[in-house]
Amino acid sequence: MKKPVSTPNAPQAIGPYSQAVTHNGLAYLSGQIPLDPGTGQIVDGDIEVQTGRVLENLKAVLEACGSSLDRVLKTTVYLADMNEFPRMNQVYASYFPSHPPARATVQAARLPRDVRIEIDAVADCG
Image (cartoon, rainbow, N blue to C red):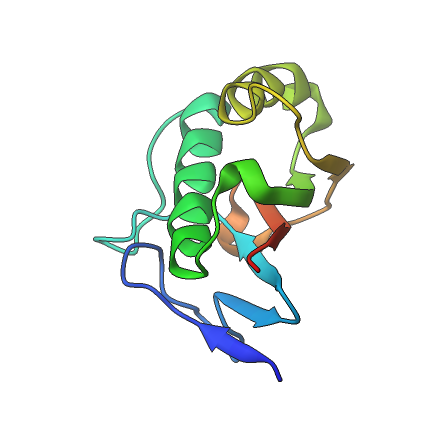
């Protein structure tokens, strides 16, 4: 049985979706963008700052699912500009220092609220 998960420690869903859904020991996390969970506003800064905010948001949702970054199995990174990949990748690597998850990275024509990055994830939570 699927179970929606929500936490005030990450930005609230801005549409008809859940921050995450757990099912059969897995957590499926919706894409996070660089919103400050306290203000709901996009964080100011470059791709490094925005990547850090996105990963902190994912971390908060993972914790609400009873999981953590070290239990992430797969992520998808959506970038507005693939030229920012190396800088995003440095920040991303710092959150997954050993045994990083599988990942796909794509350039998206446009992301919600015209942000530079969005990341979703699938994690073990069993």
